[in-house]
Image (cartoon, rainbow, N blue to C red; front, side, top):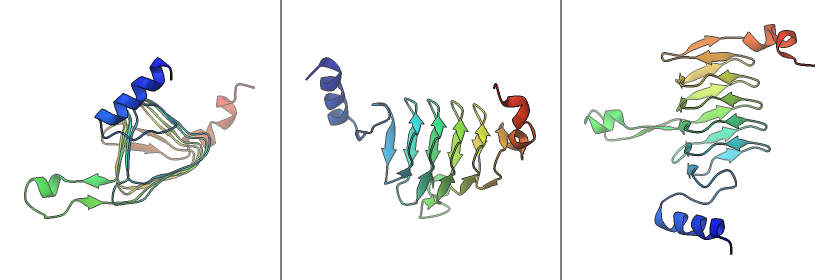
Length: 153
């Protein structure tokens, strides 16, 4: 066993991170469904514990991204006894920029881009959209309208 494999084995033994095919520093909780040809960068979190997370094919999730179905703020401030958990759907061909947060209840349509640092709240994002900021602004159809301008061929 090489140094990298030894390190990974020790890392997973010492943390709650489960081994995954993406990056040793990706934290996956629950049983999300993750499609083919998906990249997930280091220090990202996929928390599907208690809800369903679906990530389609050909998605690119940058480093330091949180995809988290759980919201515990009402429980923390004693206004509820429960953690709210909502499903998340990311359709095919989605790019999520670094330091973005995808919250429970979000449904992102295919061929969409989530700009770096964006917080995506519950709700539907149409296909070919650009989503930016906090609070998020959805530029619906942005990439559909600009398909020819964005094609490098």
